[in-house]
Length: 411
Image 1 (cartoon, helix red, strand yellow):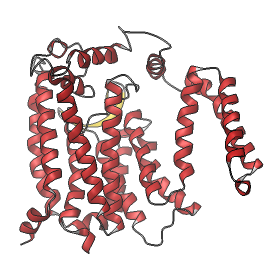
Image 2 (cartoon, helix red, strand yellow):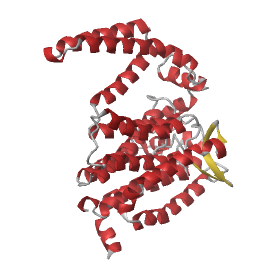
Image 3 (cartoon, one colour):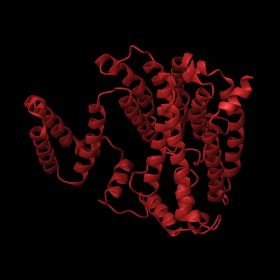
Image 4 (tube, helix red, strand yellow):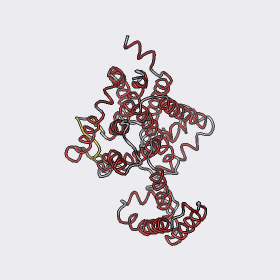
């Protein structure tokens, strides 16, 4: 009866979209790595086959267990990230993997689901009020603990993903100024790299003055406005120092190329340039499966991983790319719809975390391959090569589908 209930209540729309994305992803990995001597597409097929028993295990576990043991799962995840500094394997300058023979496992891919469960568990307490400072500190600690372990690996791409949790927390009552602070920080940082700091400071001053006089008389506070101006000015004046002395050279190169300050089509900018050529050459209908010249020629480095979408653009064209994008958007919207209909805070918050993580991966990856975001190593969910990524996203999604199938909202 329990298995029949799962089959009946499982959201098959999400399952079908998931299956379609995994299959389409493998076809593109097959195309982009067909001439590769390391049998990449065969390895990915094995990873895909192994997701089947993984899904059955996730669905077989009582949905209540995910909430009950969320804190323990989170602690195990943190330990696995910390263990990399002792027993991790370094690949391409990053100490992000555990090596078991020829097989590698990246714990940061699983930490996203663990952190989502921990956040949902913390917020499910009816006494939690994110307007209180101590509650804000506690929930932000949950977000930043894995980030502090991921950044030194160094893996800025995985760390960036955690920024999406601020949107989820805002949805659950976190003051809006957290989100605005993050947004303004990014804008000031980029502007300072493009134009002289003094002009950025003058622009910030003019904006604050405008906001001050546009505000209602009772909301005006000259002290707060002055402190904001001092903080913004201090940040702007520190940007160039941080950029030149804290950022690594390859990070500086990527930003400089993105902002048009330097042109290096044969060096750091090679990947992005070849990616844009491949996608642009696909036209409306693409060159056809296995017919992409950029793909067959191996002109796009790491095309089967972070740049897998270039294969879609070249071989399937604009319409094929639009189809893939539509599948992803359909999945995001469906997960959000399912999250909205939950009646328990735990399952609702977790559902929003799932949608948020999948979305930011999708958005950053596409922005990266079309040249409007620096290359930082963010995979495309269900598409990019890698067992850890595929299993991490599968676990993330199917835990939520299990909650919904078991009618967690009716407990």
